[in-house]
Length: 137
Length: 118
View (cartoon, rainbow over the protein chains, first blue to last red):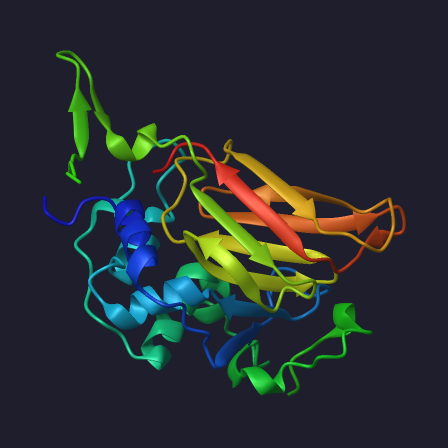
């Protein structure tokens, strides 16, 4: 096994890659908790640098399979062979599938728009009514 | 300087991955008050701004379970009643909050995760 553990690759990458601030944010609502406000997903700059570099992050399918693995059991993604470089747009799609529940991006059958990938400029800076945020329909 | 590249250590009976010997944090993040910027981080894939005073950290390399140690600090300069904590933890995510007696409030957060990796 030449690629080692994911955590070790992240540690090595942090020493040589400059963080990359994404120009995108992911705005989403959770259909399981309709009373909660819309949520905003912010890509981590170090993670984005790894995604753009390639050879560090595992295939997204390994994270999805690991969702069903009980705590304490061996997981697949830390030891999976890393994938190649992604574009920033591909990285955002990867992140949606990794960090947002499938009930939002895969299983939702309703007619509301509950997920949008938006430029960072479209996220309101006024947080006076943060707990009332909804995705405009 | 010489560098040893070792994945596992074996004492003759047990093999331990060097990954699990690191006593430092397995993940950390320093975020701004609105949960919209990650200032410093390691092993974090994203920050979720989920509501006022609530920030959700997702790990790139998951922890082995949900019983790891999480230490969240609210970098409060507003008052003496600012607190921070972890509400919900899973192997892949840690939900942190800033709060005072009146409820959740937005605050810059510093979070350290320690424990065993998956």
